[in-house]
Every structure is written in structure tokens, then in C-alpha cells.
Length: 478
Image (cartoon, rainbow, N blue to C red; front, top):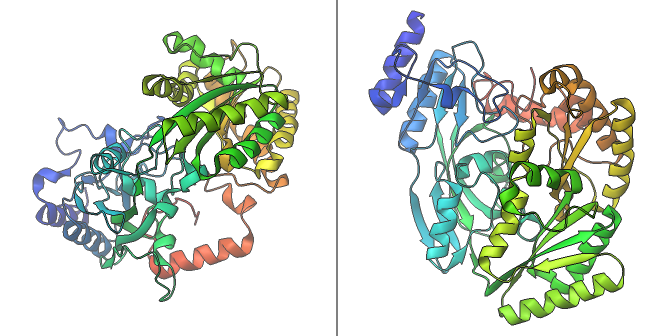
């Protein structure tokens, strides 16, 4: 280890305490939880994992790294899917874990806001809001382990975007440590503030490449009087889009979830998790999961659902449907949807896509791209599911049955990505809807991002992080 790195480690230990600076110097210390991404796509090697306990300590760490010229990799729960929060293999990067910053600083009932630190686990925030009589609506499969800082850094989406928007829409203010180690105090709970550039929205979704989010002020909502969940079988994706339009008409703002799931995706859940008892999937190409959050009563919500489904049956959009009769049944249906990625992992290595397409064009996109992939790679299996309500599909590609999944991934990933991303571009979509760019898609971005937009992004990066020390190689390539 170089003298410069030894001096940096000494300074980091002084800043946060020796017990919160983890290195490979101690052979008993296992850093794999911080050095390997959730999907095990990448395993780097850090100079150190540093765990500050306050914003002041985060700023001290950033300043120390800036003086030493050491790059930083901010990390929350490390649940990301685009390899954006683990170090490279150089052994020179510092992983900045925010998980000790886990305090709920304030809850303002009159302002409908909650101010929290970046390391707070999403599910804990949901529970805190609910105990106070409010709803924090951001919800995704990793909510038991992901952190709100990571959610904001990637502008996470989830299952209720159709009603409440992405993480960016739920954030009113931020506290950020800049690349120079200064602290921007922007934790205003104001809904109106036209005093210049919107720095909040700049840092949300920047994936730690511009600064480190240390705290946020978030929107709260009244708890709904009732939540009902329905599961419907549909003959086509066109029918699913038409049902979405009906749901908007009948439920209005009460429509808080609209998920589509292809037959093969559900077959994997049935195969690998038979205890979940997937309904209606065997005789229909698609199933849809709908959620109605009602501000009046369960009776009102159920009446709305019944009118919606009756109209859908009359129009031939739905062939069968079930409405959850209890909260436990609703949770079971949502658990099936959330288990698709785990079931796909059980089936073997796969190529994941997180794309968005205008809702009206999704059926045509899937018909064209399904046929293209099956023609180019015979036997390929398509695991198509996602948030149809906001145009976001997880359009994943599984190796042919009985084939070597590892070889398929190494030999076909670049080709499959090109085929899918080119199709997304033809349909005026995005190659990343909610997972971010990370390092996994950074090389693809210049081919699919407007060049003027890309130039503006590079100018912002240069202005805020001129020495490229904040999560280098993520989002923007050199």
C-alpha cells in the first residue's frame, strides 16, 4: 500500500473512528457485502469501506478523499441492478456506506412531510409513516433492505408510480455533501420555491456522480380508508392497455397499482415457488394486478372495482378475475408479482432490461421485439412483466431451455442488448426506466441519449466534480 493511501486511511480513521474504517489489512474482515453487487455481476476491491455516522463525518471523508485524489463510491443498501454502487478492481477506491445515517429527524403532520437520513431502510420509513397515520407510497421489491438515499440516487420507481410518481416526485428537499466536501442544506419542506435552478432534481437520479445525498425531506399522504387488490386474466397486451384506460376512468386517483405479467414469467413462479399458488395463469397470455386505494370506504372501493370489472368483461378485455377478500389475500397476490425476479434467478442467469415505452405503443413493441428475438436466437424465452401503468417493462431474456445459461449470457448479452435497445429507440422509449445506468449501461448511453442532452450532462459533471472523484465510470463514460 502506498504512503499516500496509508495517510488517507489514517485521516479517515480520525474522521469516523477506527472501527468504522474496514480494510483488507485485517484478514478476518470480509468486505464482500460492500464489494459485490446484489446480482453478483461484479466483484471489486476497495481501499476501504468507510461508515460515517453523521453528515459532518461524511463531509470530512469527502474532503480527505479529495485531498488524496481518491475516488469515492457512495453506497446505500447495495440492492441496485446496474452495478452502480460497488468499487472497481483497482483497490484504490473508498466505498462510502451511508447505512449508519438512519435517523428520522422530523415528521411534520401539518406539512405532510418527513425528514430522514439517507441510510434509513425504505420499509422502516413506510412503517414510521403508517404509525403516525400517514402513507409514504414508495414501494418496491427490495424495500426491506434498500435505503432511501439509494432510492433517491437512482430515482427509484416501484409499484405505485402510476399514482404517486417516482422517488423524485416524492422528494421536497435534500441535504447533499458536494464533491468538495461542502454541505448543501436544502431540506426545505416547501412545495413552492422558484428561486433559481432546481438542485434537488439535479441530484436525484445522479447515482452518486455529483455529490452524496445525506438526508431528504419527503412527501407524506393520508392513509387510504381502504385498499383493494384484483387479479385479472387478459387475452392480449392490447386488452391490458384498454383495461388501464378503463381503470383510469372508473378509479381516477384511486388507481395506485397496475402491473402486467406474462404467462412465462408467472410459470416460473409456479415452477419454483408452488406454495404461492399463482391464480389464472395457465390459460391466459397475460395477467394484470390492480390496486384501488379509496379515501371513502371499503364498500365504495369494492363497488368501483365491480363496475370496472363488469365493464371489462362486457368489452371482452378480461376473461376471468378475482378480487382479494382480505389484506392477507392482497399481500399474497402482490407477493407473487414481487417473486418473479427471484423465480427467474432460480431458473438461471438471464439478461435483464428495465425499459420504458409510451403505454399506447407497448403491445406493438412487444409483438415486434418478441418475434425479432425468437427469430435471431431460436428457443430464447421472454420474461416480460412490469409497471404497465407507467409504461415500464422488465423485458428480460432467459436462455433456451436446457442450454448453458452462463455461456448464453457471455455469448449473447451484447447482441440481445443491441436488439432490444435498438427496438426501444424505434419506439421512442428509454433503456433505463427506474434502475438507473450505473456501469452496466454507461457504454450504451451515448448510442441512445440525445447528444445535446449528453453534452449538458457532461458539462454539469465537470462543473460539480471537476476531478471525477464521485463514482467515476457510472452513468457517464470518460
